[in-house]
Length: 457
Ligand SMILES: Nc1ncnc2c1ncn2[C@@H]1O[C@H](COP(=O)(O)OP(=O)(O)OP(=O)(O)O)[C@@H](O)[C@H]1O
Image 1 (spheres, rainbow, N blue to C red):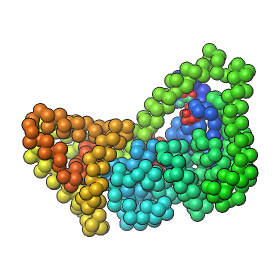
Image 2: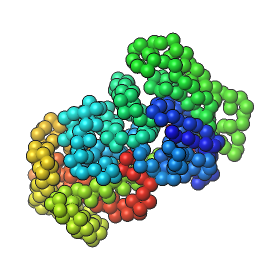
Image 3: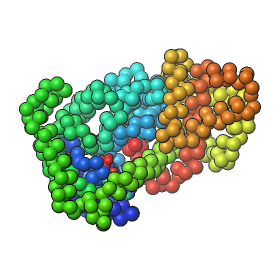
Image 4: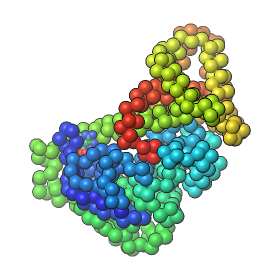
């Protein structure tokens, strides 16, 4: 049981996002949360996830006050590209949080495969997420939450970045998993129809500073169908009511002239600045989470190249190496010749092959085996890197490569652009490794803070 009592949160700049919000969520229910843009939905989820400490009130999960990210909680955010690691296979991404549960490697992989099968991605485990469509990537993110088996799953606009058809498929997937896994789900959405379609209840939040404006039970058959349910008179009535409540919030407050226009809380300014504030907060949060994850993963990845028994030693050595070598790694790279780079890539590819070869001899070649997808390996990571905190530093590498090519090579270097997909694939873990090393530099304190669990994104 999740219980939120008289929750209040004001940000450091004095803006109050939540004011006196009270809500109870029974175990096993799926509650949709809707509200006007900027009202405080994400702030509420972050308070529940323990990612921010509320200014006032209490949040308790199964009787325990939340004062950090609870162990049995998982979060799925809208932007899956931020939460999946490009240097890890889909399966390893899904298995990663399970380290927190102390499962053996084989148990983690088994659980990951099972979760992937549940979201319809059996067979995709050996690929990288950037080889998959947006909808498939979000399935991976859902599978990761699923594998973790949280008692509470928080979803913040989880289908906001996919097309309409995929969105419907994912809604049905969540409904199916909710029924089979019986986990409690809180789903924040902007989509009124979606809130009614998936929810057992729809909680409508009021304008910022938000509190619960209405808490409506959804009186529709448990089995939902995209065509029939949406044509159900009760569905139509509900969506109209929720719509009125959301719009009514703005109208009622506008009419009173109290909320938006006061100098104390100018709403226009709030919505102009907020977008950036929110983005900044999310980016920082994701970067922190990812840094924490990178740290965890880097330890594991480094250790993988050693024998099982020498894991600790490998980790220690790599840490030392990182501390000493990480800072100069980037400039040094720019000066390396193509020959040296090629040798390095080959070595890197070999190192990468070593790891899966232990458990699954053919698993190392998800990219190599698929020339058609190799183009993606050259393009997608760069794209992702642009807006992906985790990979933020990675894009500089392809750029650096281009610069170098321009400076040091002549027409011959045009050929370098046509490097085989194998080389690009081999380069991917290389970039990733550099990213991990950089990330690790900052990871200590984040891991110490420990508020960000592997199960959160
Ligand atoms: N880090 C922050 N510092 C200051 N104000 C913030 C911060 N994060 C959010 N806010 C403000 O708190 C309010 C609620 O933001 P929040 O992101 O929770 O709203 P939301 O309902 O999730 O928005 P949206 O529907 O647009 O996703 C907004 O006015 C926003 O500007």
